[in-house]
Length: 75
Image (tube, rainbow, N blue to C red; front, side, top):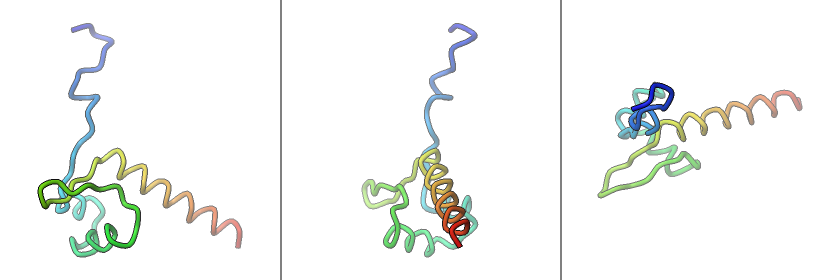
């Protein structure tokens, strides 16, 4: 494999479980369930278990922070 090309594994995003997302966000798993139900958190249910792509979760967090910052600037 050429030195300048990223490896296949570095192109893939990490898939996280609900428990991992809970730990990553620093919230209780019930809070993650609430976010799934009440917000547009990027998640998919596969065979009865929730899964999250880390890069989409990070993007969702950044979008939320940007919106909050814009609302604060309007005050």
